[in-house]
Length: 596
Image 1 (cartoon, rainbow, N blue to C red):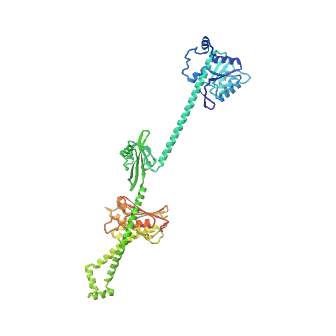
Image 2: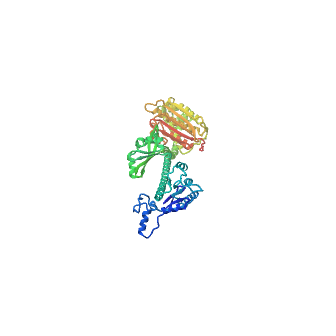
Image 3: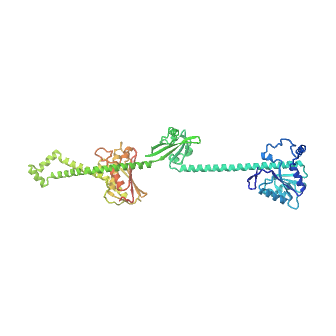
């Protein structure tokens, strides 16, 4: 059986209950022992039956009436380990020693008067101070203590019984039986209670650990940059992380139980896709899902992961913003395409350059040969029987002079195209120097205001120029003329777009922004014109691509600008545009340009 020690633990023992007899009279000890110890077995059946009737409280009946007690209690119900003490101090020492040995006393029969030492009441008090569950029977024949005095000394204690001397034999036997049984049951109760407390502590610790893990998992999910949404098989939200709340502006409490397609209407996350992922038991990924936020396009990857665990079916929807990645990817594709076309353009330019030079040179010679003021021309005309005036008159009437001039202009224009094509394959040899970007852009605006083509075709003066310059922008190492050419090309395109918008553009404006950051200077040129669709936006930097009518553009202005920025200046150039919402060109130039 298990017995509780001073430290609250229990020991296991198969020994009978232990009783301590405390009285200064040895005869009292002998009398009580004779009553509590079962008689020795004898051979005579008649004597044995008589002993059972005399010493068994049930009179020898087969059923002792203790079936409700634990097995170990029934086993030792009439067996005791009995020890003797003759003074109060000795009893305290023996109780302490027995508990220290792991075999404590269940019951103490304590006499009250035991001179010359402490009396039984004082001894009981000291015992309970160390062993509060010990059962004590105070045996007294005198009125040494009134009941009130005894209670004042010992307190009201349910482990105390007072037995008046002289007592009947059956009183001793029944008292021992009741008190030891009570001690065992009380001990069993404390054992179960302690076990229950231990289990409660374990359950509480488990709940706390579960709460800690749940909180840690929530923090991990909330810390992820992806939108994570848990849904059941019907598409109702069961889990909602912080990124989902930031994107939608909907709290987890508001989102819980709602259909995911209602919360993300632009992502087309239907119940069919969720069922498809669960049915196939494999992730379903939808790449580059396009949404429109304000005037800006955004790209997302949507992945649906099936979730089958603990008989709970559902899915986790992960949404990743890949807008920046998609733009970088587009830029890389554009760069590769431009490099390929640039190499082809360079080869074509070299092949065209030689015959073009012969054409321009010949037109120049023809122009010189028909001039009237050159003596050699007059001499040759006279030798042919005519004059320069007659030749000139004939050429005027036949329009030959205009044809020669047209050949010359076309040749010069072709030469300009060839030079632009050659810029794809080599860096500018111009010298780099420090310039104020704000002043460079302002100077470009002045050039645009005086540009003949802009005045003739677009009436640039009607366009409002809005400057947003950061005064703290540092000087930039660059080639000023090339940079101004880039600015002018973009401004010309903006002016063309503003003039071509159907119905006209209300308050046509061009926004100029310059600001430093991360060792770069960002330059933005934005208009409020008609904008571009995706097809035009992706091809806008390609050589020879143009949306202008035939004869109004070569399709090389933005291509050359792109290479001036990226190749000659080591910067970046991009465009953002949506139909009906204008166009913005973004140029990034390194402040400390190592390309120079």
